[in-house]
Image 1 (cartoon, one colour):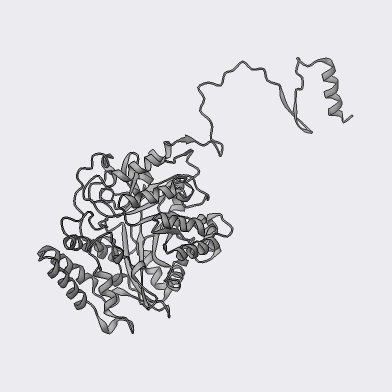
Image 2 (cartoon, one colour):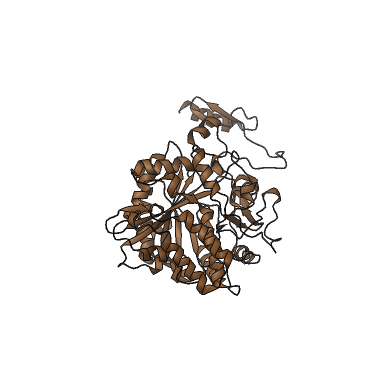
Length: 505
């Protein structure tokens, strides 16, 4: 699980705690020992299809090769989304349409529009970017339907680092996709699966790429490889060679960028950000239609940090170098527990921000107002544009914030049921909401589907192979495949013709 026990112990010690236990969820959570028991989750993943316009490794889904097509009808998709708002806690989540490649589903645009219609504020797509790169018109159509942004598969900053995906110009595709999405106002999250010995030596350059294009990219989600889907049938030697951990990732980023980016100072569990869930729920009141998003995942699931970036000079500094985030989340817990009303709570929040800001360590020209706007939302509503950094920032602002995450999903060699029951990235399916890791390591989605595909030598199951047909005798000759030789049913004249053909006359 870790190559640096001290780092892992620190992350576990900063775990903020679970969300509320689920209620009224009997139609959503009913999956035995892998049932999700706590919280609403942070990202609801809905697979629109297991078809894909690529065939590459690694692949969670094993798209195109599992032996069937699974492509929900639009009514199925609507039912999944309707169930997502049927139980408590009722919180805003990111709806992430995935696959396969979701953009090749005939229901993609309609699914995006419906998710927005029923109240989900952030609707995203996990994509390889091909359709967005090919068509600005399609990109605009998706954005107009309500697509907030994408989780873009991004393995490196050169064709070489993307070559293992099997597409000759995949890096050009990524660049054009980012360009087209930025043109229409969509944000991009770069999603990088890290495979030891394949692309782990290039993760620093991905951060550098995001910094240089900070007006178009808001987040990087690094995902150390988990051996599921297409990679589940793997020998021990290859698995050991390719395994990569979060503690390796944070050290490699520091080394490759040669930066003052300290693993033991600047990284926190993703769940720590849920400190704001409680205080923002308090600020918006009991009558709010939605609760704030909560990311109370197990500390071994994910980590994050924030970098402040000067968009003109491209200089960056870890935010937690000059802001005591650890003390701040303790303050937030106390503020929430005292619950002194909206006005006093907002005032206490602002005071905590100011007391934990270390001006002498901040980059030159960085204003404290940037931190206030980052941690003290402009609106108490969880679905307000005023809390969206991509929509509220202007060209006059020199500073941007880049979120860098590490998310390590489970496989059969690292599975922990305690992580599963508090999963924050459930799959929305016709069978309810299933933990991301349980879904990708289970057999159900590998054996059920709309119809089967027969390829790569897969045999069609038949009740019997007996028949009453008369077949010719097939015989190979020195000249190649032959037929009808020595068949007693041939007429004499046919035999003469056949002999003439064989002798070349």
